[in-house]
Length: 77
Image: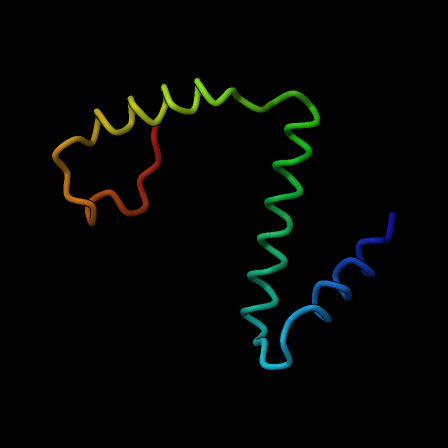
């Protein structure tokens, strides 16, 4: 497995020449989040598709009738 420095270099090199520092940071953040999620799945911390549907259903029922703009930034509890 390549070291983290080599992974970052490879990621940066894969971006277009016009990539900004914000673009690079966003890609790094995305990669960190995906890697963390994959580690959680490997550790058995994932949830089933059925549980996701159940949680989303509860969330939608809780916010039913709210306009889409009022839901920005909200996460289900």
